[in-house]
Structure formats: C-alpha cells, structure tokens
Length: 384
Ligand code: LLP
Image (tube, rainbow, N blue to C red; front, top):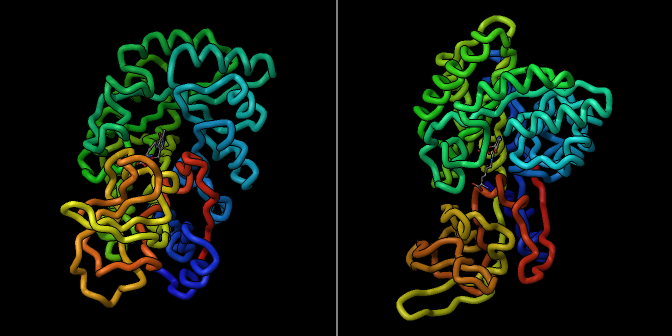
C-alpha cells in the first residue's frame, strides 16, 4: 500500500513518479532469504528487473548476489558493492568490451549462450592471463506457459545452447584452457505462475547434469535462472510470493549431490510489488462509446501494458472511498494508440487532478523507461 502523506506531498511537486515501499521490499528479501537458507540455495538478483540505486543497495545489504546482462549492469553491480564472487553474467550477445569488464571484475561465472562465445571468452581471458568461470546456458525446450515475448526456453528462442549442440560444447571446453567449467544454467521465461513448469525444468536440469557427468565433466553449479511470477491482480492481498513453495519444488525435484550448489536469478518476484507508478489525471473525455482518463504518465514511463498487453491494477487514490461506478480506458499522453494502461477499467467517477496509482511496477518499470516523445525525467520517492 501507500503512505498517503508521502504520495500526496510529492505529487504537489511533481508527477508522474515511481513510489517505492522499502518496508515491503525488506520483508520480501527476508522471506526469500529465509526460505532459500533452508536448502542452502544461492539467490542472485536479476538487475534487469530494477537498477534503481536505492533498491540495489538494499538488495546487496541483504546478501544477495547479482545477475547481470550487460557491461552497464556489471558496473552498476560493482558500484553498488555486490560481491564479484556472487556475480553472474548472462546475455546472448556479450560484446568483447563487456566480456573484458567482467574479466577485470573477476566475476564468479559467465553464463555462456553459444559455442562461439566460449572461444571468444577464452581468447579474451588468455590475453589477460586469467581463467574465466563459465556455466553453459542450455535451452531445454520447456514451455514456460507465459507471454510469448517473455518465453525464453523453447527451441525457437534465441537464448542458450540447444541440447543437440552439447557434444560441440564438450569439445570446445577441452580446447579452451582459460575457461573453468563450473556448471549449467537455465532460464526458461518470466512471470511463470504454473509451478509445474519448474518441475519440468528440474527434469531437464537433471538430464543435462547427467550428460556432462557421464563424460567426466563434474557439474558444480546448477543455475536454474529466475521467472517466478507474481499476482498482478491482487497486489495487496498477495504482496509476497510463496518463496517456501517455490524453493521446495527445486529441493524435491533436482538431483543435488553433495558439494553442488543451486543458484537462482530472481528479478520480478523480489521487486515487482514494492512499487507503484503514481500519475495525475490530465483530462477526462468522452469517446464514442467510452470514456477516457488521460494520465500524465505514458508508455514512456511504463511500457509493459503496451509491449506485452500486461495487466496492472489501476486505482484512483484521490477517490478511494467512492463507488467504482464508471468504466474508463486509462491512457497516456504519448502519440501511440498502444499507449494504454488498461481498457474498460472500473474506477470511481474521475476528475482532472486526481492521482492514479498503477500497481506492481517495481519490476521492469523504471528500467524500461524511454525518452520517446522527448518526455521529461520522472521522479522517485521512497517510503520506509
Ligand atoms: N535470468 C535471466 C537469464 C533472464 O533473462 C531473466 C529475465 C531473469 C533471470 C529474471 O527473470 P524474472 O525472475 O524477473 O522473471 N520485461 C519483461 C520481462 C523480461 C524478462 C527477461 N529476463 C516484463 O516486463 O515482463
């Protein structure tokens, strides 16, 4: 929920803004850490979900590692103080300069996404007289049953190395003297709410693990990625995901022999519910068969609805005690018809100047801001 005073006070100076509830974030991190500790699981925060410096500092202080996908994220993780030995680096297109940043930082592990990339990292590590720890990102062809744009583990997706290429990987690893094979990595998609998907993933992880070990290549690290979904429809009732149930699946279904480590890369489940985008109503107007609420925030501030038809709960927080008796399409000011946060949203009768909260925006909200239409910079406010 919101601290109404903080929201109203800040809104007098500036809208739109991202409101962050640090108390909820702390509770979420504690719940995650407690559940993971039960099984000795290692959790990295996927910086791509949120790179806000205040948010990252809190996550780092709670002892999580960092999962990065660019040189920029590696630098941000390092500046925040994340332990390099708890930092992993994935990405289907790592440039030479990004690989060199990771080598200079002595990160724990590169999650490697093609056979060619193995040779490139090897060559760059050799030039620096270093050994790079690597995990092979395998594309397991497991359907995540989520939106097609955030599905990553099917044969048709660009991510990871296909199972049929594993013999070439084993050959390459023999030749690459400046690589240390640590283990295997998977990430099959995001906003996964069907827990059976993770069971199917475990079956594949076991299969790939055995494939390598049968060939005399010990797999120390089992990195199963992230993807745990949240409840966008009930941000207050379901403010925290069930980390216990999630980790238990991996404990029950993964074959983890002594000496092995299980790693996770959670993004959304840790940060999504701790933020709302607060915006002011600029205009209310009638369309042919509908009413529009036009906000001062648009797809430039939160692109998820336009890009993935994503649902975010929308509330008129200036009229919380009023009946929700009017249907509106809630739209932004950007010159695109897809700049719409929700169609036929039930709200109380809404007026110019009302404040609207778009909920569950802590993941893939602020990080995906664009300057399209040369929109002005947005504000941020934090509540304890
Ligand atoms: N690890 C890797 C290799 C990933 O690609 C991702 C997300 C994660 C971990 C974290 O996944 P999470 O736990 O947050 O689901 N912009 C989209 C989501 C893109 C996810 C990209 N990869 C959205 O707004 O829904």
